[in-house]
Every structure is written in C-alpha cells, then in structure tokens.
Image (cartoon, rainbow, N blue to C red; front, side, top):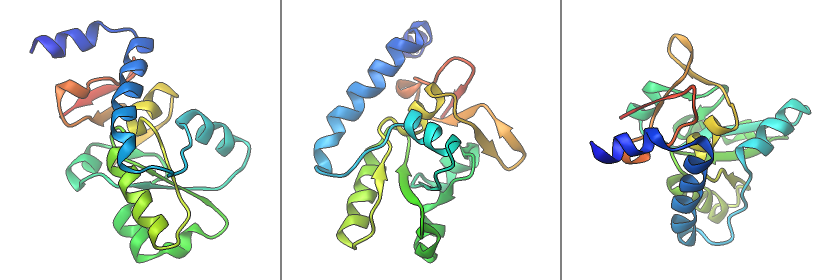
Amino acid sequence: MLFEKLTTMLTDQEKFAAIDEIYQNARSQFPGIPEITAKDVLARQFAGEKFVLVDVRSQEERDVSMISGAITAEHFEANTGVAEGATVVCYCTIGGRSGMYAQNLAARGINSMNMPGSVLSWSHAGGKFVDANGATNRINTHSPNLDLVAEGYKAVW
C-alpha cells in the first residue's frame, strides 16, 4: 500500500524515468532486438507510415485495454501476412515480454521492433487505448508496483 501511495506522488517525468530503468534491466534478455519508442511510433503514424502493433500480453490484460489499432499476438501468428508493407512493433506492459517475442520473431525471419516501456510509455506519449466499449484511459499494469501510467490514465491490476 505504501508503494502504491508513493507512485501516485511521482511526477510524470519521475514515472517515465522509473519505466526506463525497469526496461533497461530487462533488456539484456533480448540483445540486438531493434527498438522504437512510443513517441516515434505515434509521430511516424501521423506522417502516414503503416505499423502493425502486436500486443503480446495476456487476455486478462487485453480485456482492460489495448493500444488503439493493435492486434493480438495470436491474431498475428495466424496471419503474419498483415505485416506486408508495415513495420511490426511488439509491446506488453514494460517491454520485457515483447522483447522476447520480437526475438522469437527474428529467429523465424520476421522483422519486428520492440517498444521500450510499452503500454506505460504509450500513456506518457499520449497514445490512445481502447476496450470492448471504445476509448478508455484504463491500463492493466499487473500490480501497484507498476502504477507508472501518465497523468490522465488509470492503472488497474
């Protein structure tokens, strides 16, 4: 409970720094995997570049919300052809699971990138999330320890 209170007292800048620190600790598990930041994805989407955002999180996490326009890893696996002419970007909560998934894709000859900070960074970049009813500000963060979403978003676990 104390940590939960402490994370709500952090500024967005401090939260983003904590996200980066956690991600950097996980990064050694998937060396050499290309990365793209949430801000870069949003800017390049705005400029017209096509992306396939692949959500590798559990169904329970995705039920809370997904990045708008994303597809599940299961959907991607069933139809990798959706990636033709697009940049594949994998994401999870902070980037560890998606980095491992991107590594798996690379081993199979499928080019993809990992999004450092994943949904947490997406919130700090002002990205949109959706649930079964449409737009939402709710994001599944696994636990109060990862309540590092940007102001205006609500962490659930």
